[in-house]
Every structure is written in structure tokens, then in C-alpha cells.
Length: 231
Image 1 (tube, helix red, strand yellow):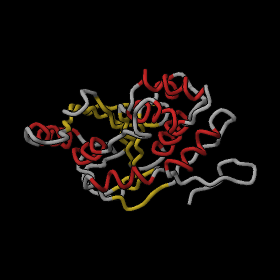
Image 2 (cartoon, rainbow, N blue to C red):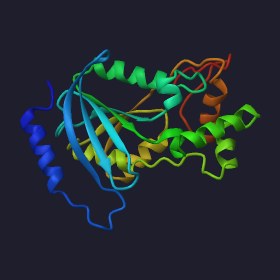
Image 3 (cartoon, helix red, strand yellow):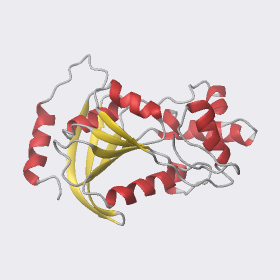
Image 4 (cartoon, rainbow, N blue to C red):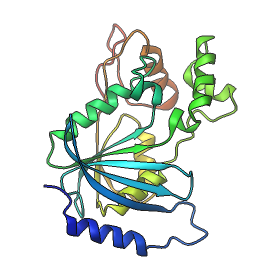
């Protein structure tokens, strides 16, 4: 079952009528929803635009999520090098595809695709950070050396996207407790965290360990140093 045509019309009308006001920090508008058959299953795709970053964001939707509770949701921040080029420096593409495969087998679920490249610092700055990592810095040290926080992402846009779809509560697919806190801060009820750990490679193991040690990600490793399970 999809979001129906009548529901789409209602959602678009609600978004046309809503007004966050000139002083709103974040205002997200739903632009349209269309069918999207994919290699991962039968989805719908929703497009959004915002007043905060001049970027377009997307939601890949499985089933009728309007008014639903406990909807499985994955927040995925854009990673051009991983998502498109298949970079092994990170696990972003693996996480994206695993989430789409999992949601594609569910009765309902959502993957939010957020245009927050490089943990929010942008593509060219991420490449500069890669250069510093080639010289021996870890991901956090590289961002700090460039004058950025270790993670500049904000999840207000994601929360507003969920509000725009009338989602009542979610189960969040993540290893990052900051995502849970960020959504809850913006009024999203998170009823459960679903672990989402990928296998490591020789190229991204240090990256994964830095996530745990410095960014608080909930990943455990076995005696050989391989990702084991979630806390």
C-alpha cells in the first residue's frame, strides 16, 4: 500500500497553507510525491525544499506512513564519494543500500536523504579533510584542523520532513545517539533504536573506531577489531 492520491493532495495542501513565519529557524515544504519502483523494492519519493540551506532533500517511502506510529526510519546524509563512487574510506554506501534493502522488505518505512555532505561541511571541504587524513589525522582531527566542529549536521530539517508526512512516531535505524537526541529535540517521538552496523574493510576500520571513540557511536568490536554488535 502506498500513500494514496487523496492523501498526497491533502499533504500538499497542508504544506501550501502552513506558515512557519519570517522568524522561523527552519521551514520545510513538501514539493511533491511520486511512485518510485527501484531495485530495492516499490517506493514513493517525496521532494522537499527548505529555507535554511537552499538545498533539496528527499524521502524514500515504503507503504502508507501518513498518521502511522513506530515507522522504521533511516537518516542518511549525502556522501557523494561513497554513495556514487563507492569509496571504501567510509561505510556510507553500505549503510544506504542496507537500509533500502531492509525497508524494501517492510510494510512501511522511510529513508530520509539529507544533503549534508561531509557531516555538513560540504564536498570540497570533505576532500580537504581527506587530504589531511592522508597525512595522518583522523576524521575528527581533520575537521577541527579545517576550522569546523567534528560534526556540523542538524536534524531539524529531517524532523520537519517527518512532520510534513504526518508521521506520529518512529523507530530510528542508527548507531549514532546524537541522531536520536537531535530528532527528539525537534519534537519527533523515537520509540526505539534499530542498530545499523556494517562490516568493516581495511580502508574504513580506523574511521569506524574514530566514530566510536570520539563521536559516541554505538558499535562494539571483537578481539580481532572487527565490528561485532551494538550496545
